[in-house]
Length: 75
Image 1: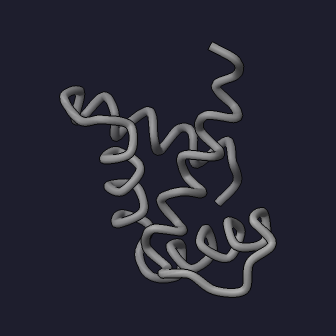
Image 2 (image 1 turned 90 degrees about the horizontal axis):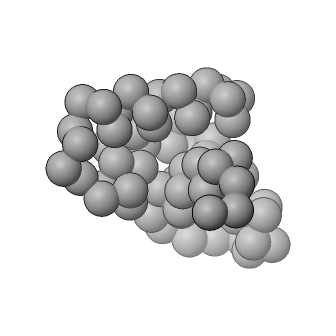
Image 3 (image 1 turned 90 degrees about the vertical axis):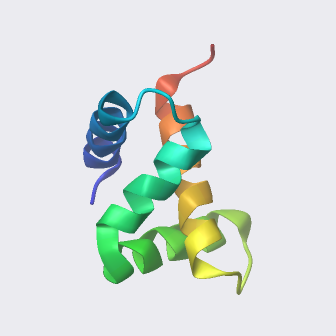
């Protein structure tokens, strides 16, 4: 999944669940990705942080937040 596709997924999830916080929406998006998507984003996060290991789900959620907030721009 590209960063642009991820932002679209995030935006759609946010429209479906307007009362959730951003990190809760990111967790929802990661759950929808399935195991393969979760591992992909967790590995991207670990590479960005220059770390070798972490819990997969929280690392994937962090990466989703990183992508969304980076593409969102300075606000």
